[in-house]
Length: 334
Ligand SMILES: NC(=O)c1ccc[n+]([C@@H]2O[C@H](COP(=O)([O-])OP(=O)(O)OC[C@H]3O[C@@H](n4cnc5c(N)ncnc54)[C@H](O)[C@@H]3O)[C@@H](O)[C@H]2O)c1
Ligand SMILES: [Zn+2]
Ligand SMILES: [Zn+2]
Image (cartoon, rainbow, N blue to C red; front, side, top):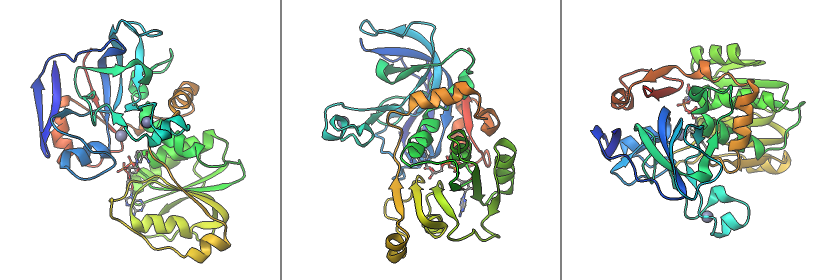
């Protein structure tokens, strides 16, 4: 089968490799779509991002496809099922897994990061991370189950009420998802901040955004929001997130910063305003909600997909030769 193998940083080769072995508790999936995200680019560049890979590895952790083979011990899944895959595999034995926080697992492994992923015609996955895609949900949108579930996890970490005023900082794919999902969860006022006029306009078109701020030329309101999602990952935007908080606000730090990055904040504000600042990492126990949101038809994922590429075009994308994307998908001919 054809696969995109990361051999070393910046060495991503299209190769013919054997179809993966499928264990007794696993399924083999014929890939339909593979999303590409910032983590893939970090892995490609060898940067310390949200995950660490050990090449040679087949990338791809945002996948949908059709089951081609089912291991002997798998129940509830069958050849021909349309599925989406949660890349994160938990050990179920560490203290975090045993205390209801599998996302913090001490032995986390991940498809497309620590084991071969779906930038290939086929990939295998443990049945426990494979989710059936309901009739009526296209495999193209279903490939976005993983990023949607990461946003759902972040949303689940906050206490939400319809009357809260929310600000999402970051007009990229994740910021746009947060804007849509917060509205699905009942928030009436969601504002969006970013630096791309096109993406801010896209946000206004796809969801019921109350106000947008182009922060390279407009100032964000200070002390104005009950809920702030930071979905960029820069110290400057993290500081803006805190400044935007009014009393009693919650801040979700979702963007992935450089491992050694810092920003300064006024600690008196945290005390006096009773701020809650939460980190959000990956997507524990959130895939069912992501599938339900997809099934509801209330998310517009299709218009967030800006590029469809062939497997052999991915290195060009990684090198920045394809231009600005909101979300690029690799498509596989059936
Ligand atoms: N916590 C998690 O589990 C998790 C999961 C997925 C992604 N992430 C992180 O979330 C962040 C956003 O992901 P994405 O896929 O949308 O990335 P992206 O690159 O598509 O979007 C980033 C956006 O930030 C905007 N931006 C850049 N500088 C800005 C600034 N100074 N002010 C406001 N906006 C600015 C850009 O216009 C761009 O649209 C990344 O840091 C990513 O690593 C976290
Ligand atoms: Zn990703
Ligand atoms: Zn664990």
